[in-house]
Length: 104
Image (cartoon, rainbow, N blue to C red; front, side, top):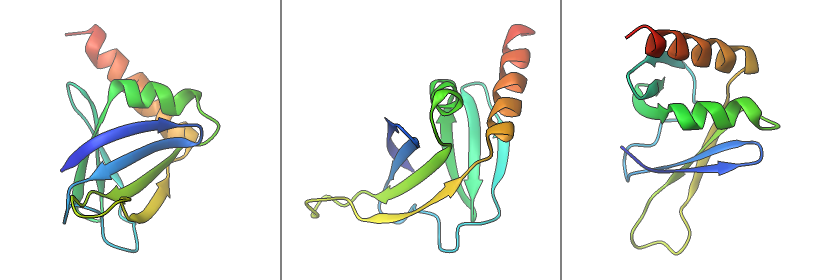
């Protein structure tokens, strides 16, 4: 379960609930279009990415998704890794999402 998405200069930071962070190595990346944007599945973990985050990824210097694990007892959320999504993949997903939204 994702708790927050933060926009940063090289992509986004996804703060995930305790126990919901994708396992290392973060591979097997799959995308599904939804009514709110895209559902990203990394190593079997489903992560909702809203359309606003896709727009941000389209405009940033990088297309990275950084994962931090939320822990109510930690002062700083532990960093768990990242994945890089190709810019072409972002543009395809955003274009497909906009096409579907315009034809509903």
